[in-house]
Length: 574
Ligand SMILES: [Fe+2]
Ligand SMILES: [Fe+2]
Image 1: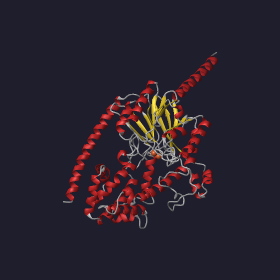
Image 2: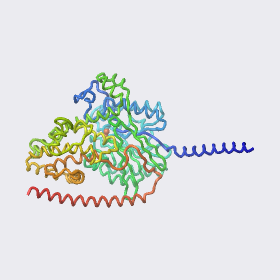
Image 3: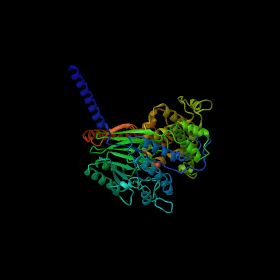
């Protein structure tokens, strides 16, 4: 009898443990889980490889450093991963599906073909929204206007639309039982990059969010342009990538109960949050271009109290298919890709960025011409910058050797030259989670390399030319902000006394450096934020108040410092 009771107890214990773990598993099952991939930039592959530099592997890296020839195969691999992963229920794509689709609708047809194939094989839905590369105001037969876009992608969101906002390509659709997608067309088809937001679109999103709540659904927003800053002062430094009036809009949309936004366009992986005065938090997840380093997409799990996000990467493509399409690829190139496509993509990006920035040093790109009074100053500095960036960092005739003659020590590292360091910082910006503190080794190498130019070049430049250039800089709208960055981040590094000429160069470089080397505290790639069921705003209001006060104090200090520095510069020339 005793034995029977103990067996019974054991069985009931086993059952109760099973029941507990079953209910825990049930509780842990997300409401919805899905993938977000942005800026696919599909291109038809070239017939031949075009070479831009002498590098035997990466010399075909183009202006945008996007893997154009490989784009179709990268998209295929992404869709394969989504098909094989049972957790991925559907796919969101916030725009730039194609690279040249606005002027060639057949690119869209090719992308839609891939989605059709994916949907019919897996039964999983794809939801799209246009980006600036996808639509235009048509002037020729092959152009894609909004109506044609919606027709080609009819099966990918528009067929499930609860409502559309014609003539724009915006729509809403339910995602499972608890969530509703608000897919917003943020473009202006008459512009190449800039957003096309207006009061109507802002209000339409608010109305749709309210409607979603009335229907018992939580609203998730998807749009191409960024809602929040993904680099310091994005509206100043990269204004075509973030929507106009972004702070006011974020305030309104946060208060309309939207917590989660997916955007693309900037081609960086970055998560930014904004908390409204009423304590409502909205997060904008900018997702990097799928076909550019780091070849990354997001995997999202949504539960009542939490939203979990994770970065996933593409590390291979069908290189046999690539060789078949473009026989020009060498065995060495394909072998390098097969070793790991992600590492390949990084080198490809670094080569492409260097080529692009070097071209950016041309007169027309800089917006200067020999008639300008400050032409010689800018030209000399930029040429010197290019020379020093190309100089080997270590060994005979190196930047390290040259630096020592001025008492500037460049720390040892594995970097080849200044370009190698600079492009590493750019790659880190795209990949998200930049961990390059301004006092760290990598930024120090770059800054000290640059400071060699300060010591070598400015000794020979005419003071009057510098005054003129300086005045022009200050007169530009963001001149003040450049100086504030300079004050706070560059002078603090302790490079000794700085002349007005040195000020000038640093003023040009500091915002660029800032934008690539720094990040906020929100993890860009992997993390957890509050779910829609988490509604406690009281703590947010207190945090917001303290943060605003801190900002205010900082701004006052900036202004005071700037005024005093202004006096110093003026006195210097007296
Ligand atoms: Fe894009
Ligand atoms: Fe874009």
